[in-house]
Amino acid sequence: MDLISIIVPCYNEEESLPLFFDKICRVLEKMLNIDYELIFIDDGSNDSTLYLLKNFSLESDKSRYISFSRNFGKEAAMYAGLRESKGDYVSIMDADLQHPPELLPEMYQALKDENFDCACAVRKDRTGEAKIRSYLSTKFYAIINRISKTKTMDGAGDYRMMCRIMADSVIQFKEYNRYSKGLFAFVGFKTKWIPYHNTPRAAGNTKWSFSSLFRYAMDGTISFSSAPLVLSSYCGIIFCIIAIVMAVYTAFKTLIFGNPTSGWTTLVCILLLIGGLQMLFIGIVGQYISKTYLEVKQRPIYIVKETNINPSQ
Image (cartoon, rainbow, N blue to C red):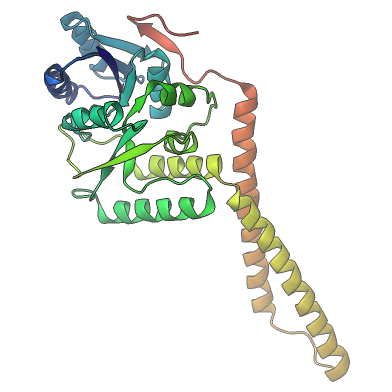
């Protein structure tokens, strides 16, 4: 029998967890010739999430949990789950039921019988999502695919099932600033894309604000592309050329025609523009330096406070 590990990051999911646990168990129990383990990661929740996870582990010997000492983020939670998973196949899911458990049998069949290494769910639409958020998300994928050699499918999230060798490949990346969507694409392997319709949360509210999504997009861009640094270099070269041309033109105009220099308002605006661009590009360089700084410190990606399994070393 194949063992399937289901990794479920949780952050303040007390409302949706009972619904998720009931549904995922019913789906997995119907799958033939497989065994499974549920690995819940409590990412520093401040509600009853950990209490529920402990109860799940008492109800079923297939349910395990890891509780972080504080909120380290979903990326850290997924990494912890991957490290502790023992399955021949490993799946990552959200606890809010926006990732339909009904897709698991199809994913398993793709890996088991169709010679795929990974089966990933792709949203066919963004029904129920704010239009501005959908628009920005689509544009982000278009931009990052253009500036990065690692291509990410628009609509593909973290919901996927991987073979053991692919999961182990992702675990090898021990970087502090993680962007798993990029890592999944970077390691390669043969992937089957499974479309599904976007579904609303079963309960509770999303934990992803606009600012957190923006930071996540920045992390993905910095992790898998140096294009912003190249852009700042190009802009510097262009402005230098413009400055030289304007200096020559002004000198020629003054010496030949004797016209005095003018346009102080324009000059101030140009200086403000150039100064603003300089600060912007310094900020971009600073982002890369700060990420490097955090990597060099080699801080732990997460810290376990409580668990009913023995964390890997």
